Length: 354
Image 1 (tube, helix red, strand yellow):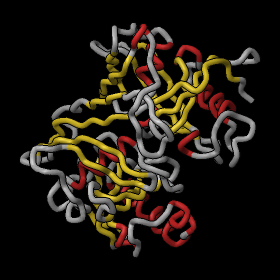
Image 2: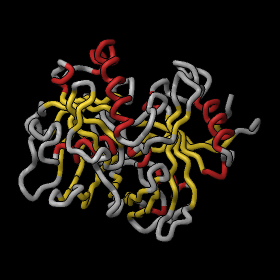
Image 3: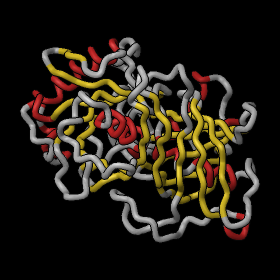
Image 4: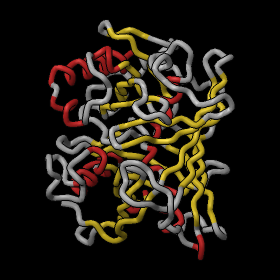
């Protein structure tokens, strides 16, 4: 470890993280997590002695390896490194960090680049689900520059198209089995289409749903109620005691602010409020509002018939997702979901853990 560890830091979507080959890290989870805490500088609110960015959105890790699954190129394990606690959790996926996995796999030689563009089939280890990432690779390497803009990121970059595959007939997007549930007197919809999310009307907390991140984080009473709700919902969703985990997320929803929006969101991740919204969290919210009778379905402005593109508004703008459901089945079946993101390599080199 005194010689350091090979590491690539990338912006993936609206997050930033450290990307590692699994072979460059200890095989044992306990030893690996201890190392990552020292790499990122946790526990410390500023992560001053590591490469973490002192915020949950910039304290993330991707661990990538060749996949043993037939037809799959690489395995991707996402790890959330908690900023101010000695905790590393694998209880969720991250669709933003996912955006960098395909380019990273090509950069590290795990996948051979194809002419013009490359598709990488990825197994998200956290949930054992499959996604295909397609991105430009002229001259045999990922191209990061382009004209695709995503809200929450300055400038533009090359598009990375993420198409999520159906998890099979056993997948229930409603973990509690219900369209709505009531916890602590608050009606919610619990949904999981890639990310466990509890959707609740902002008005249920006496909020408009258009408050700033700063306003919501400063409201101690609101935060207390949100965390109480999260604990109860987590049990009902089969996640057990979620007091030490980062899922489920709580997403407050309201009618869209813009003329082109589908639904407005403010998402707790789980204590801080997201500056935008996670990719898979947005897909889950979009799934919920498409279900008749679900929380948010009466607030959403749905796209014209035949269109499956939803604009999920968040504090930094909006995230475009595509969700196609078959609501004639019980439980509802996800036919297709996808999103366009961008990513950029920030540095590639050696990191020295504390």
